[in-house]
Length: 293
Image (cartoon, rainbow, N blue to C red):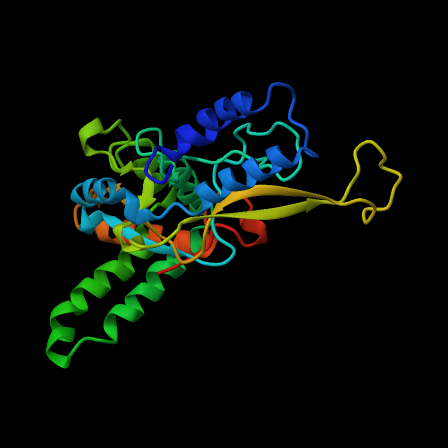
């Protein structure tokens, strides 16, 4: 159990084993069934990333440090893919779906989700400007007097860039592949790419999955009852806190005129801060999907 494709197990093998175990519809009062369910769920929650050293080595070999960001989950963790159907309506089951990579079977954040979350921030240009402005100030502080004279021009150029850039055009260039200056479609080989985010090799010797509960207080069959009457706790799967994800991109410089260029480095800094500020995945409004650097 500890080295198989978890996604395949969660969506197929679990239900196959369930049908073999029970000759009829599962009965939650059946002690044998209850014990089997506990053992089975314990197996998946105890899976250790060290069991996937080959996968970790492969992902590490594909990593581009110049276009990647490492972020660590904080309490209560990360949930992603809860819209996938996964329940049989019996007590103490893991009711919600979860996003597992088809090939490795490990938890992941789809590149489309990363791209969508980052693009949502581009509706707030003052926020984007503040990220780069703060980044400039943090870059100046560590420099020596000799370095400051050399890099002052870079800071001035970036300050001018923040003022002059058309954020709508930049958004279209990054997320739709439309050339900033000509407004024509850019070659596929020159467009920014948002890859899936995977667990990083820093998670060695860590169990990365856990269960959690959300309690539904409203009774759909009897809406006249108090919300505190017979609350219904829903058990679901999540990625634990203190788990490192690797966000991977392929980024290009974006010329905005003959003198100024929006560097790939600036995009990466924007993306990192947006993810730190807004989080990603489901239930971010109650604390899930938040990271630290």
